Image (cartoon, rainbow, N blue to C red; front, side, top):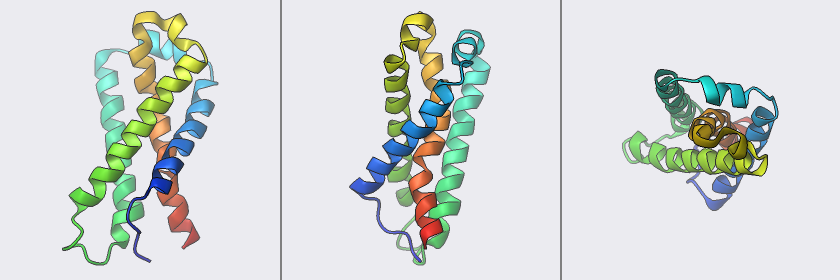
Length: 136
């Protein structure tokens, strides 16, 4: 079954999945240590790994089911989903860090915590496409 176009419902489910995974990650307790000790190189690789994982998920869970690939290029298929997933993950991780008061504890290292929590949030945000594939 060919994937449907990205909808408002997909955006909602992306935020919900990001919230679910983010809460699990933020409640583990290692976030403060990670944010205080992670260096720039590891931050770069964390972001790169997130981009690669999300792109791989978009391709293998969604795009491989597109029948008319000439009409629906991967770049178009990828762009809407990728931007939505990234926004959902960064906004959700920022919200959770503020909600749990981690920003007060970390001070200047809060951006590192946002990036660290964004990875599991991004993976959670991709759940809607995965669940659609399982249902069909």
